[in-house]
Every structure is written in structure tokens, then in C-alpha cells.
Image (cartoon, helix red, strand yellow):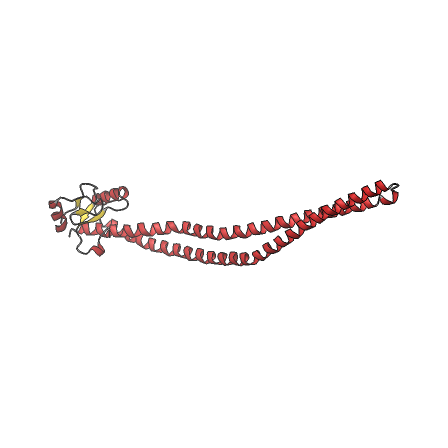
Length: 242
């Protein structure tokens, strides 16, 4: 095989590895954010339950204040009794007191209902807090794992970039220029195999004579459709693309 073609193949394999690792590394922040979103949903659920309970407590306090106000009303109304001079006035005051007592009874019933609801909501909090804490710990562990994965990936990329630099330096300038131009225009794939007389880059038919030339491997051949560099690979497992 043409030595320059062999170097181009190795360069493409290195570039393919770099591309895959860069994609994997770029996905990590999104994966962490997705994990954070799941954790935040549990936090939001806990906060919502706490907010509901806080609102119930406020309503109960408002009811207690209203009951206290009505009790004051009763006390002030009863304080008028010693000054009453007629049965009609006396009866009117008693009716007023009874009406207020009835109102207080309604308020106290509402307060009891609120207390029952509050008790139910308070029972919901401990398991929600436990779940939230568990999710937080899981997220922290997941985040640490992904950050370590990003570091390892970057270390691998540094090795591959150094290998790429060395490989590119051994290729003729004109050929390297052609390669770089195609790889930018063709989804990071500039060197591909032929399989069943078909270019594995654009999946278009390759002319029979060109297939023969590619098999011989003495010259650099480009696909007439996508301009990718073609080569022949006996073992599909080591071909580009796989």
C-alpha cells in the first residue's frame, strides 16, 4: 500500500477516536444538568409541601386571631348588660352574643379541619426530606463520577492529539491539505473503505476500474461523489468507518 495512504488511514482512525471522545466529553455537562434536574424536582416537591404547610399554619393563626376578636366582641357586648333597662335591650344583647358564639363555633370547626390537614401534611414531610437527601447524595456521586470521566477523557484526548500531530507531520503537505478540507466538509470523515463497490462515506457506487485501483493501493483515489479518499480493507472490523 502507498505509504502516504497508510498514514492517511491512521490519521483518520485517530481523528475518528478524537471526534468520538470530544462528543462524549461535550455530552457530560448535559448529563450532569439532567441529573441535577431530577434532583431539583425532588427539592421542588419538598418545598411545595413545606409551603403548603406554612400556608395552613398562617390560616390557622388567622382563625385564632379571628376567634380572639369575636371573644372580645362577646366580652364587650356582655359588659353592656348591667346598664340594660328593658327586657327588649337585654334580649337583643343575648341574641347578639349567641350570634357571635355561633360564628366562633364555625371558626373553631374550620380550625379543627385545618389542624387535621396540617397533621397529614406534617406526616408527609419526613419521607420527602429523606428522599430529597437521598437524591442529593446520588446526584453528588453522579456529578463526581461524570467530572472524573471528563478528566480522563481529556487526558485521552491529549494523547490522541499528540499522536495526530505526529501522524499529520509525516503526510505530504498537499495531501494533508486535501484531507483537512474534506474532513471539515464531510462530518469528520475523509478516508473511507469500499464495500461491495460502494463508497462507505456517501454510499454511492464506485466505478469498477477505480475499485481495482483502490484494491491495488498504489495511488491515492478519491470518491467522485463525495471526494473522500478511498482505500480497501480486507477486515471490516478495522475499517473506517466501521
